[in-house]
Image (cartoon, rainbow, N blue to C red; front, side, top):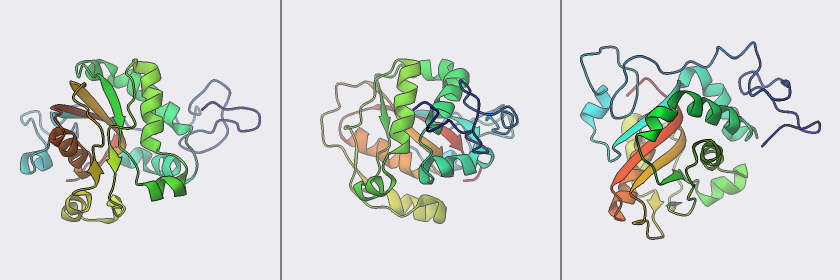
Length: 230
């Protein structure tokens, strides 16, 4: 979605109108903080020590996906992502996808993905919001990375509670049975799930388990941001 005279593009951080051709304003360009340094080999959370391979959460809870990657530290972009989802700012997807392509494309290429699969919304939430933010992000990434998008491989059949309002254990229970795989996906070897935020990973893990139960094996993920907690 591009800006126009009628609907000019806005900065994804301060929400002010920005110059044509830009995705973020000059004063905000340094606010989003990329995850740097040592990362968990499984979920990509920042690690304080180079002597460990996995974060405490991935050590404690076995994840169904093989590996994932995230661009930003969640705290630095949480207001932006909230607006992206809840304040009718779908155009922010272009900014996020641009950053993912710029900084993570080399890692994503190692996933050898056949397809991008956005995490689906429950129909009632989709109707209320009018769009699926993960689908918009996946489509923007598809343009940049040349990987097709499949929006029909997964369905959300359970109306879950909002994850950020739940504890870690509650999030795990909340997502159990949330997804259904309505079609044969065995034609895919490597799948990248696309979502906006990784916190405990409960949503992405359950989606991965659903795909694996449907005969798929190699599941990866890409998200805009990742939290620092467990």
